[in-house]
Length: 222
Ligand code: C5J
Image (cartoon, rainbow, N blue to C red; front, side):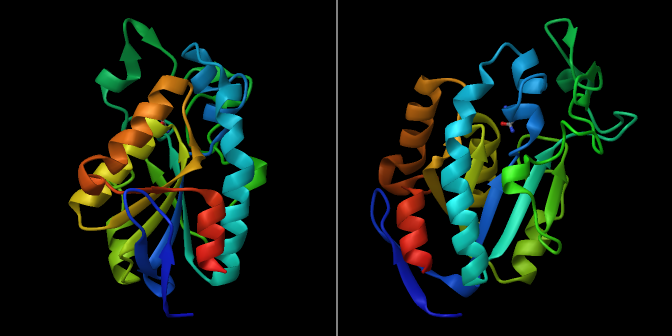
């Protein structure tokens, strides 16, 4: 399954080796995408994120067929919240994390809301990185896992564009990974943040990474 491929991307096409490429699906959890979760409690319209599901599903299928390493991440905390800094727990005098919602305790590991939506459920053997922060490298073994598999390129999907996707791509870029953000596979509650967030990745000659889309990714993988 080795062999150089090229993915159409902005600001310029990127060559990648399938053997050294991983698909990263960031935080496609019920707590962000479904009513009653963390996203909605914060006052967001969660339906804004749903357009990312179908294209991500297509890229996931193509990645699995191509034998790519597929990594899923979930944002959330231990049952006793000891890994949730007070500054994150309560914002503006309001606490949502750890409180009871219709899908269980908000952003708490093991609860239904914390888990990944059915459409993109991980297969047995696919690593799931549980992260306490916005970035997937912070306080996790993600970097060890990628280095052990000699991964150089990341195809990135997930939510939300300007929060956990941006933080993770910035962390990855600083560590020397080449990130390709698939613009129809990432989503924001705010259309303006989606537009600007995408533009920021590719600006200044790919300052944080490349921007492509699901169709280009599927073409490049098949
Ligand atoms: C947020 C995330 N938005 N996964 N988390 O709090 O982007």
